[in-house]
Length: 287
Image (cartoon, rainbow, N blue to C red; front, side, top):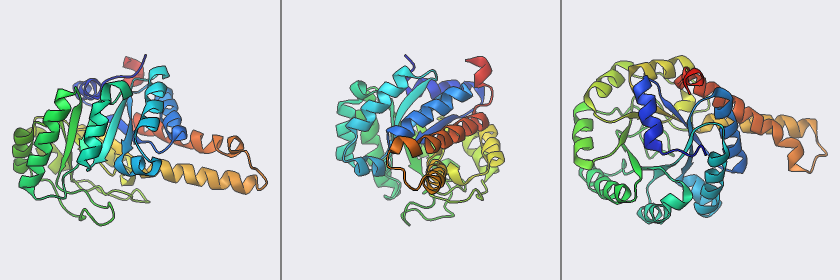
């Protein structure tokens, strides 16, 4: 059985000076493709569902149950993570069944609140999640994109980050260091010196969001500087959609989805394997 706790996977990446790839899942096809890509790379990974994906599916349980079974059967060590959860009622719904559904971690996002309100809300969620045996990530310093809710150019202050972690008890911190959500090209440049300062000051693992818009060499530099979890979402959808368009153009009369979704699944799997090779290049020889 390869379903693993997020805490275990992140700790292993941290000890190795590497990062854990975390890939957003929208469907069963996505989940299977992420598992296949991680297995090809011989690397651990997280299957993660965002609040937006959960809303699209009408609730978290069916897709989480599918992710649990895919992880359990995978040749790669996989964990299940909830990403950018802002709705407190949804937090409670997930935590009530976290063990049953295989959820090892949750990213509670109160970053749009004022600092004191972010601290208070995050502290409450951390206590509730820890009681349920769930690892918690939070965010400080808004990360760009997200429909204008997060302003590009914002950076996480190291001193404030240390205070935030101490006040909330979070297990990991997503930091704003130059990446942006939903980028369609890979042109972002990261503030590597800031990552180094944050890693030296903050006592928990650092998380990079918006990694789809960051070139491989920048991601590798960020990992070397101290990033320990790397989130990827938009890049998977770009690869899926491009392959699907190509297949439909080649098969204009196709009506059976099995005929034209194999290539998109393979495109995601290949991309996941490539990202795993960037963030945790030595895992294939050590696991």
